[in-house]
Image (cartoon, rainbow, N blue to C red; front, side, top):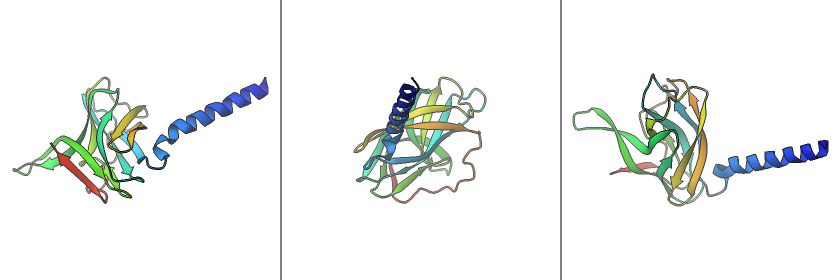
Length: 165
């Protein structure tokens, strides 16, 4: 009986590793440190941040999906004609071969609108990123404190390009 339990445990560990390794497969973008900030009060929106490292051919992040909100979109911050920073959807984020792109506070990010419940520090949730070439990559997003990432510099990683609607 003990041998059966050990064997079953090994199979479960192998399966879990195979599922987690999806974003570490050659040709698939590698997603580093996906996180979201905890919600403030009853906020109905939130955002996720991460670094996307492209180990395959030139690619483009074209969509994102999650069950934590009614809508999930790729967003960026832009300055309007009056010098006021505004946030709006982008139609994709180019990630060149061998390059990295940072999604961070004050820059590109994944936006959750119509949160079904507040994002609570310490919780986790799945997020699926959709790339033109690599297809879908699902990651686990960890919810950090409300000020997470506030000290990061405001610049895009090498090769970051985005196009707006």
